[in-house]
Structure formats: C-alpha cells, structure tokens
Image (cartoon, rainbow, N blue to C red; front, side, top):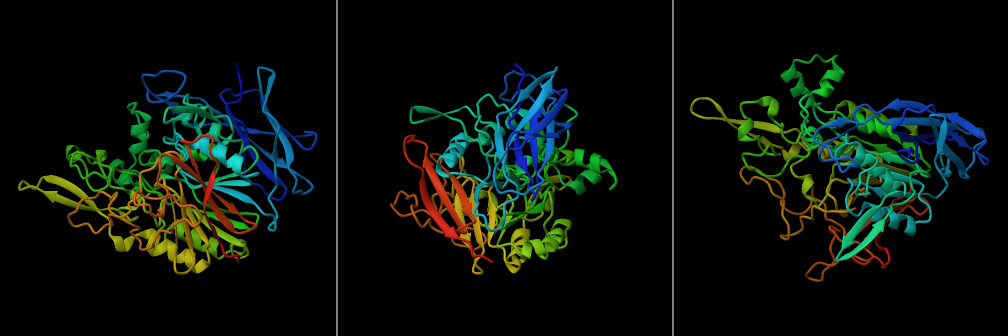
Length: 539
C-alpha cells in the first residue's frame, strides 16, 4: 500500500504564514496543502530529493541488508499564507498524488506567530536518538500538558543522520518523526511488564526548533562502502582535510566531503546551523556548539579523546584528531560575531524572555563535559629512531570556549536561560548573575551523574587537571525543589540520571516558569510527577 512516509510538521511561523513539510518515497504527480476553515485555500509544495539517505546491515528496517544502499526520499514543503491574522487554529491537510491517486493526511491545525502577551507552553527536550523511553516520554507530555505550542530540541535527534529509517520507519517503532507525531509503536518492557507507547501528535500542530548536536554530523563520505556508523565516526577537522587532500578554500563541497557535514539534518529540517527567531514573548537563539564524541578510554589501541591508536600512527588519514569542535564559537569566529550582532539587535533586546539553546553542556554532572570545550593540542612522542611512537591530546582548561568566551557574552546581554543536552540526564544550575542553566535530556537512557564517588569521570591521570566529579566549571547543581529522587542514603539528589525515569520540561511563558516532570516507567499506571519548578525574570 502506497502511503505518506510521514505526517506533516510545522516550522517558521510568521504573522501571516507558516511552513508545512512532509515526506514520501515516491516523487508523485503533485503535492499540495488545503487549508482554511473549510480547507478552501490551496498551496502547492516544492519537492526536493534528500541526497544522502541510506540504509545498511545495521539498519532496523523492513529489509535485511548486507551492504550500504541508497534510499530515495522526497521532501515536500509548502508555505501557507494567511491574509487576516488570527490567533485561532487553522485547519490544514497535506496531499500527495501518486499515479493519479490522491493520498492525504488527516486534518491538523496550525497557529500563526503568537502575540507577545499570549501564554505558551514550550516543550524542552533533546537527545531522542531512538532511545527506549522516548515514545513513552512524549505520550506523557501530551497527557500532562493540554497544548504544546512549540518544541525546542537541543540536538541529537537521531543516532546516524544519514540512516533514513532512524528518521522515518525503524521497525522497532521509535523513529524520530513517528514519536513526535503519535505514530510510534514502541514496545517497552520493564520488570516483566510490556506496554506499547505511541508518542504524541505534537509537531503536526506546533513548530519544531532544533539545534545541531554531534549526532547530526556525518563524517567523510565513504567511497569504500563503510557502514553508516563508521562514516558517522569518521569526521576530521576542516583544516586537517585541507592538508591531507590538498583542497583549496573555494572547493567547499569537496572539503565538506573530506571532513564532515550536516547535509541530511539540513535537508530534512531546513534550518541553518545557527539562527535566531522570535516566538511570542521569547527570543530564541540557537547555536552550533558541538564537538565529535570520542571514546574516553586511554587504551593505546583506541582512537579516543586523549590519544590516537598506535595501529594508526603511520597513517594520519586514519587519525581522529581528538575531540575536535565542528563550528567555532571562540571570540572573533564567524559564529561569535554573528551572535554579537544578534545580541545587539532590536528583536533580542525587546523580548521578554531571552533563551539560548545549543547541544554541549556549559555546566553538568555528566561525563561529556570532560575534557574542556577547546581545540585539542597534540603532543607527539618519538622513539630512539625518531619514529613517531605516540600522539596524545591535551585540552587546556583556561581555553574552554564556552566558559571563557560564550557565557560572559550571554550574561552581559541579559540572557535568562541556557538550555542544552548531551549527557542524558536532568540537572540545573544558576550563576551568580542569575543566568539559569538547564539540561533536560534523560529520555530513555543515561550515562550517569558524576556525583561524589559513586561514579567518576574517566581520563588519563598523568598531566591532566580535569574534574572527576561535580561540575568542572564551578557551579553547584540545584536540588529539585518539589519532589527530588532520593539516593541510597535517603538524601535528595540534585539530578535525575535513571534508566527507569523519563523526564521532560515545560516552559510556560505566561508565568515565566520552567517545570520538570518525571514518569516511572516501571509503574505504567502511575501518575507523572512534577519534581522541580523555577522562574525566569521578565525583562
């Protein structure tokens, strides 16, 4: 049976328009949207093919594969223009015509850009990555909050951005779009009890704003049939690619193909790497703050954060070049200068709430904050024959670009909230200037919290001054103020890092409150628990 590959989702509302996007696996005869109270208006869609969608033997797809294959997926985008501004929901329905037969979605509703005085509920989430409790999490969001007006997602939407099934039709039932569109079929088993969760119809009716996480970045294009997970891990810095492959600055596509890219993310979502937008009383600034994840082991045979594998020393093209940064945020960089302009803009200064979202944590109890967010400094060692015998990487703490360059800029500009993910837990912090930091990324698994001696970060001991526990950047994690979870000693924990509790956070712009909730998946008949709430000052 031929059908749409996804329901539609919404993006970039203005005072008199909105973008509607959906996908098919057929090019079709035509694609359009009917909208208005009686679906009397029509907007034709622009259709493009996604260029890098693939599957391989590790895909959880309806076909079992023995090699990498391409999938042709078509993206359809229509702009719906509305003459008379309204704050009411406007019905719409998308249709794709295949061999003369119309295939239509259900009827959904969209809102234009909300007025600044309209109270909104914003879902704050990240790190979905097809994790076991994502469908549960989103189903509980819909059951708890009457209406979600937008989704702010701080990166890591999927695991491997070029793997099509992770976006659309993973047979385990928890692909990205189905979970956010109420079409998931994820069977979750806890303590011998199984339940099927469907996610929720959210992005058909509320716009999605996302940031680039490290999982949105693919590495060098493979010409040898490397599996997609290997391609994902095979990213190297741009300046290294220029040297290794003698690439000119003007050969941008060639350079991207030999270093890293976010092509699939951009082609699917249609968003730039960093951007700013006004949504109601909120000015949202989204940054590209992510580095590649390398293994924390110091094993000399692993291409990790702290060293190259000894097996690769004679082949620099095989090196990983440490935990390198994808897009610089250092003072004076292109992104930093753009951010300075944004923070000086009228749109930013006039907003009641100023929220900045990116992926990498500035403050966390999680493990991924070590080493510091800076460029790896290589240290080369040679044997008595002057042959290279080792490559190690240091990360100077006094050059952490987030802490030294980015955060002071945000504090000076009056930002009230920095929202991020990456460590798969919930914790929050507040600086002496009143800037709040929230990480709400525990949606299905956790890497744990480095709290006292229960769990410590792993890194080479010699010559490193990294923090094994706590927040390396000096803030105290705040204990949830309503219903914290308790540790084995009976004392309240300043975090949630649990494989049995899934967490989501809601920003209510009418009250200025950020409320966080957990659900214990071992107790499917239990209630969602609000465990923390704090307020942003109103500028």
